[in-house]
Amino acid sequence: MTHPYFDTATSPRVLAHRGLVTAAGEDSGVWENSAAAFAAAQAAGAEYIETDCRVTADGDVVLFHDDTLTRLTGDDRQVSAVTTKELRDLFADHGGLLSLADALASFPGTRFNIDVKTDAAAAPLGPVLAAHTERVLVTSFSDRRRRTAVASVLAAGARLRPATSGGSSTIASLRALSSVRLSPARSLRDLDAVQIPEKQSGLRVLTPALIRAAHAHGVEVHVWTVNDPEDMVRLVAMGVDGIVSDRADVAVRTLSRG
Image (cartoon, rainbow, N blue to C red; front, side, top):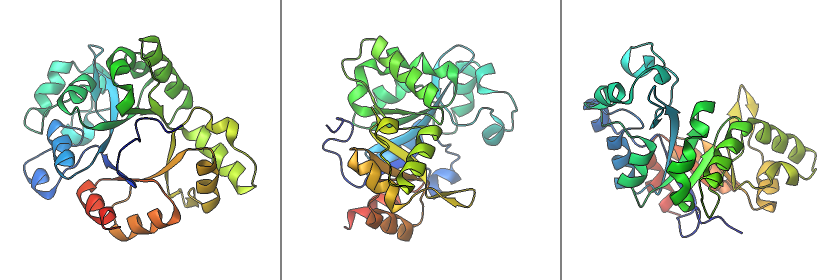
């Protein structure tokens, strides 16, 4: 049965990678994973936003990709060592900080793809996501962390588990089993999607056999991070169900033509 996360949404899926920062946004200093970046993605027609969560020194679940502030601010502190107020002040001139709760409340029509970046963020997700499981997908490179996060959501009283996509070990298993035509049913149990690069470290991850195996078990295949329109069209023609892109505006225009 298809998870409500995918029901009634446009296919192929366009997942706005950390929102959308346009050229105008860059000029005005908008940061990824900010309220302004999410608003731009929504305005471009993206139904899904891919984002990342960590916890601050206060234990708040905030949307931030890196483990430190270095790349965005030049400050080498870890996000976990910064208070929410400090982080909110840093984002004030760059599009606005979003906690996960903020994002769910401010963008009620948006479906979120949430990458759980740290073990510390897994348990606090439960109370935040429990009332929104029809429009969230929980994922992590760590399958153990992903399962912990999903269990936390269910323990918080959710009537429906959130959608979920497999981590690195699941993807490795699916890639290996599909290549020798063995069933990946056990690896894909309770999954709704796999989200993968086309290639990694020079090795091809996405193959026709992988797509067929995933689809045979009702699992969608999303590819990241795809910014070239020709690549978007080519991958969808292969059977990919979703494109994760920094250029959600381009992806929406390109894929809506079909």
